[in-house]
Length: 361
Image (cartoon, rainbow, N blue to C red; front, side, top):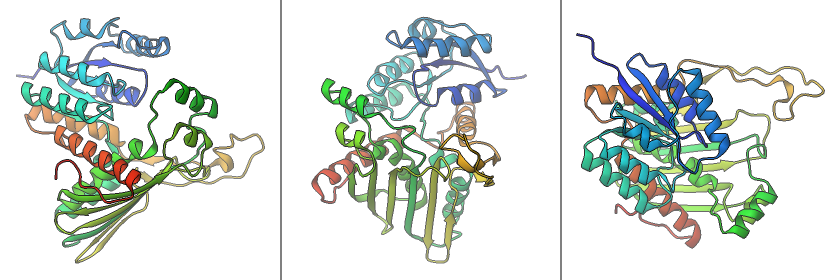
């Protein structure tokens, strides 16, 4: 007998990777999209995106996400919500027995992350979160498999560069930074934005928990970041309980002529070394002649076409399989809590200029 398809709800189109996740879920033969919705306070633009996606996929749009949850027709939900709102919605999803895919970060603070963990554990549902490239980008995934199989012997040293380039196209303006500071609104720096990708890849490669974290962080490139008091570049070092040491440079640069994100890893073991030069995908680099009038961020006809499956598609496939096979996904609620503890320790270290033991120590 053919197993019925998992019925999925899509909630939140205000920011994040929801478009990619929703498309990937809709493309799974084991999944049926049951409906789309958003928070009551969602922006008009977010609701327009949600309605448009629902119309394109011929599924209903619910004005309130509670209506979608209470249909009794869902098995899982994909949430892309502001971190401060996420714990409440996850708790309600878990109370309905729904499996949860959550955008990152899962919460605005540790208390919220712990609320989510209690709800997930209490309901016995599957949970995963959107640092997908940390484990599912094909080059990183292959390196993790190699390290776990002992291909380089005992892992001893890890290095990473994770730089978002092509700024200031994607950064906040000086005016927006001034508005946020005057309103007392918090802003997320690049260590919080990208650090989880590095930490979660390191965690899998090292195969141990972190003993201590040391970080230096600041705003070196963007005046708007200095105004908003957030970082654009950080240097982080980690010491693991099994003796592995790791170093990472994480941030956003003004460079315009390299890939959208420049990701490189080095894994040094007792019997070999692994190098990952293009961590976010197998890529072919194509340069063309400079053309007058080109977008300044894509001058010279620069392209990076990829081949193979994208990390977000592999992430979605893993989560769907985890539900059907009644197993844990590759990225779990425990990984989410560890990532939160790492970030808290790194930010505290950057403030005090001292090594910090993460909260799980």
